[in-house]
Image (cartoon, rainbow, N blue to C red; front, side, top):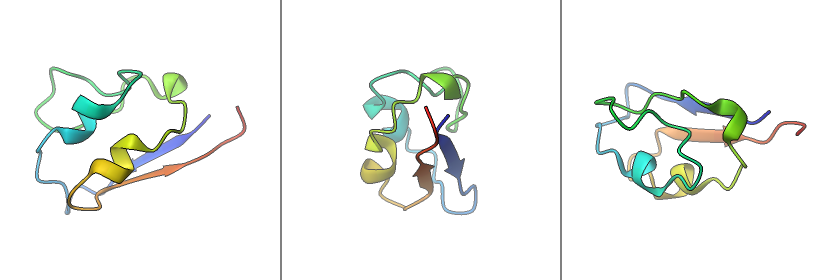
Length: 63
């Protein structure tokens, strides 16, 4: 399973990661990104690439 780490110090709650995630891994109702479906992450790193504050890191696991 892929690992999604969110640095809370860097995150400014812009929700861009939530918007760009193609698999809806994040809770859409949350004010800040919360990973609620990590098993659905395909490791595309869209959240990591689109984060303007470099607050997200996706580490590919053994799927």
